[in-house]
Length: 295
View 1 (cartoon, helix red, strand yellow):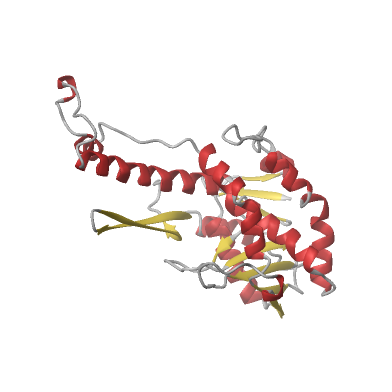
View 2 (cartoon, helix red, strand yellow; view 1 turned 135 degrees about the vertical axis):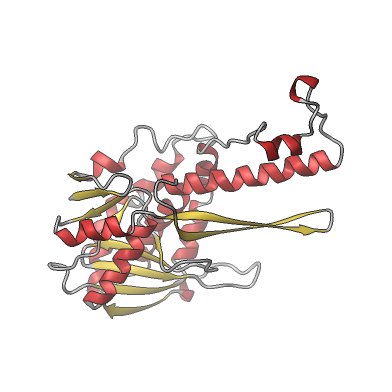
């Protein structure tokens, strides 16, 4: 496997554990059972290859779908990208809470040494900063991983078969649950590479509030992708990658793909609207291009 790093255009040979494993990365002290994620993964990782083969051959059952749905839920809920975006979301929420407390006179003003300013003024000037421990949004992701798995296993899927993977394989990344296109999409489709010759596109279904996920809601169709479709999917994967794109080949086109899309990342688009005595906060995850050197 070859790794291609977006941050510095480096290229290197690697195995999955060289780049994908973080010591104690699944341990989370915010949870009553800090290693509960490992228990979940024991029901997913050993069966991943079997599920991929069954899906590729069209001989799968709901258990295979749940395995892949669990993998996708793990990536979206607990990966470094999820932790980064989750921490930003919580920090913005905390800032709004501070402003509301300040508005209602619950917080004292800063001491004279800090100019006697309000917390809101200090936040605006940068004298007060809110940081969120990234392990806290990870704990939230772990807590919701079973529910997210159920949702993904009841959405509509397109099973994408790449018959020319020897020449143009699907690439993957350190965040293999790519969002296609740019801008805000609610809900966003996810395209997930599973093997060089296999990927799935998961299309979320908007359900009435209070409705439960039902396995009978799952729908799928097979689609043999053309080389041009593979290129578009690989662009989405490279743009959604946190930092590293992986490929089974080091053909020049892979390095060009990564270099061309290195400044694209998943970012949190945050909107705040006044609503009554408070605010309505709206968050969405979008693909955005950053200026060179900005991160």
